[in-house]
Image (cartoon, rainbow, N blue to C red):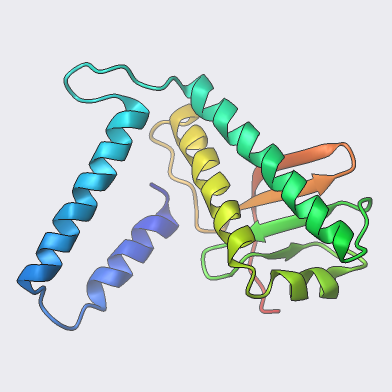
Length: 170
């Protein structure tokens, strides 16, 4: 878990004004069981079940990245936004999904992104997969809050990477 995830959890904990009600505890328990079950399927159960190897997670991340690229390219083409030039999408700790860099059609792309929950959620799903890969490849490493996830849509194909970035207001 990176610093921004831990900070978000801590902030949520600190801003809770009312004590948990019994029905809240049931919901949290059910959600916890669902998360535990999903993690067990992904990484194997504690009692020696088969785990998904890192290569499988990486392959899944790359597959989802390719599908995201295809979806974005189709939708941008319908808006008459061409690639090249490349379009860079970034999501930071206190930012929503936005366009990184100075694309000539930046305003049109931002308008398309506004309220486009499907693309934003898909981006976040891919980010989580790449964060799992990064955390697994760098055990014990804590990444700063300025480390943001990018997806670049280029004429040669998509790229995904982490880079330090200071979010600016739009």
